Amino acid sequence: MNRRMKQVGWFVLLLAGLLVVGCGPGRSVTQKVIDVKGQYLDLPNRSVAVVVSMSDYAEFNHPNAKRMITEEIARRIQTNVPGVTLTSPGEVLKWQRNNPYWTTRPPSMLIKQLKVDRLILVEIGEYRTHEPGDKHVLRGVIAASVNIVEAEADDPDNFGASFTKNTMYPEPGESKIGRVGDDEAFIETRTQIRFCETAAGLFYDHQIIR
Image (cartoon, rainbow, N blue to C red; front, side, top):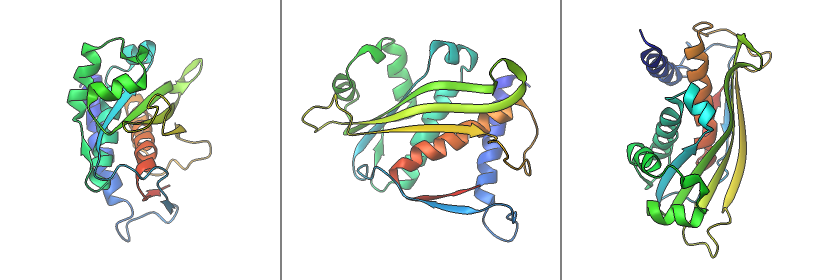
């Protein structure tokens, strides 16, 4: 099985697991449910595009990461924000491919080109699946800024809101109970899911299980 298929397989299995965990007596007593308040609640009934950027190095080594993160953040927002209209991730990714220098353009130009009310720019500064300098110690890290561009702002080049999100899996001291194993594709996918849960969760009240 190639690496891409393994990663997609882990992603589907983990999403299914997240739906099961917390649904009844089967939940581990070591886990807890945490209520999280959304921090930017101005997406309902608006058109929205999610655009993810990564370094060329990260994209080369993790060619499916941008697509999977774009799709998952968009899916979570579509599912949890009432009345929101998401530009399809496929359309956004195609636009990025057709505009390779889009990152050099001001936010005001980007939101006009994508024709939306809100543009969510996810700028990933760090993306790795193992400890620096040691590929044998697997630990996923995604560090990013999540910036919101508002079409009707007096100056759309100034973000309407900006957040920094750093995700790690597994976190130091985190229980290994329930982990499938130390496969790098699993670590990467679990880190992606945790990051998307946190990034998308900026826009609605939700619960997380740890």
